[in-house]
Length: 137
Length: 165
Image (tube, rainbow over all chains, first blue to last red; front, side):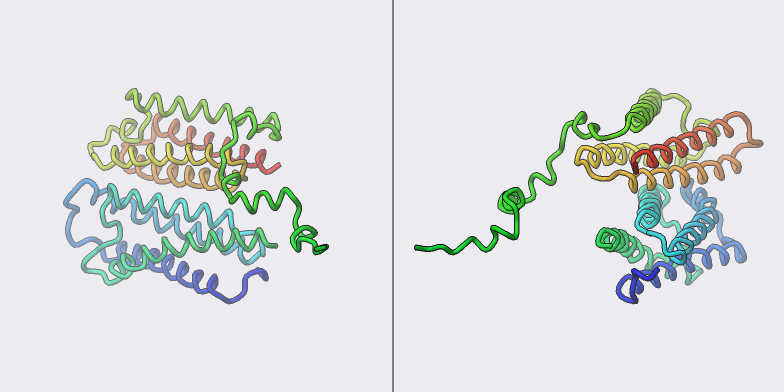
């Protein structure tokens, strides 16, 4: 924990935390409010089913990261795993599932759509930075 | 008479100078598989052989149309399931190629193996959730699906542990 000062890495962590919080928040909103219209396509149907699963999985990953971070262990490997899963999930959405988070009625969906590319680039930067710092130790 | 010494002579060795002048091409040069495996343990080689064989079998059987995919197990009518499966197979092929590339570069593969096992956990969990929704009740297909992924994850983690030695 002491190897990471409050610098660009810390800003990245805030961004990642914000994204993870928004994913969970959006899924809670979806569960509470429901979908106003039935899904129009197969992929839309699958997206709705995957949504809550993604929220749970994001929470688990965040919890694992926090555990590693707070106990002062090396986080490069954990961040690498999170980055790989995030990019694969994005590819699945991009190639098959279309807009996984987009719900026109919900502002949280629009915010997530905006945050997602930022998150994907940020997590890659964090992996590179964490590995560089761990190699210099 | 010029008795000045080369300022770099005492600082860097001849080998380091050669690397510096020759650029970084040697760093990215792929070694052969026997060279890459020379300093590895026998357990590492066994894990590599077993996992490579399993991956090869899965790919061959998948392309031959065997009922290995989630869509086939659940008899789903959603084409999106089949498309997701295809995307995952494609990503799997890329990751296997990436792993061998990393191995032949003689770089550490532990973090990549841990990342792949985490990805397998994601595939297993998302597939299991989907199957529980699609199937009327979890039968043999469901348990085989989960068991196969579990075995893969355990094998990959054992492999990563061996690679770290």
